[in-house]
Image (cartoon, rainbow, N blue to C red):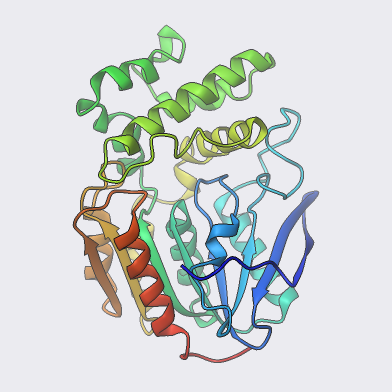
Length: 320
């Protein structure tokens, strides 16, 4: 990865509904524009994301999506209303940010939930996207959500039983994600804290059984960020991200003319390779790179492929 760098510009952008979106820009002010789309949803951008880009050749924009990271209001506060936090409002935020920064077209980089948001943005605004680099491809279909929070439990039965038992007994045979969303809105802070712990313990269990998996990938964050992460995740996934089932794959023809690189771990237990493979078949300009010894959180080989893709695109496309 490239050496650590600091932003040369940053701020908060008012995007409506009382939301202030945190953004920052680093690298070369005259470089190729790129936008980092973080995962979660609700994880927030991190300094490590800057280090995938050559700072001499890229103008890198990072932002925290609604209600997480340094954006305000923060979802850790139970008084924060999440009804104005949806996929389509995030897409509008990205467009406002692009216009605010005076960018005509930008490369998109991200993974996991970020890949869903990137695909939705590129299909809605293809003329604004120069290239895409995606790792850990997901499209947040109901079948993918059901797999992560129920189906994969067949490989981790004891850990999944603990996840299931974290919700009231009457809800254990139903929609677990919706049940957790309800718990994260409970007036008792102890109930919210336990639900956040139980949710991230399950996510960590799935990751820790992958090659190179980090056993605290989800739970190792400050308490407020942990609460916001689980509250936003359960909010989005209980609504299937407000996306018609399979729409991103059906509309992949709208990506025609946009070069892409998809990097996916063959041993990704939480978001199986099938989704990346399906997308690559529907998007002729995309190249799928399968990392044989990686799971969802990747590793050195995954990072190497991401950086190589970004380096390869660094000299292409229009400047702002």
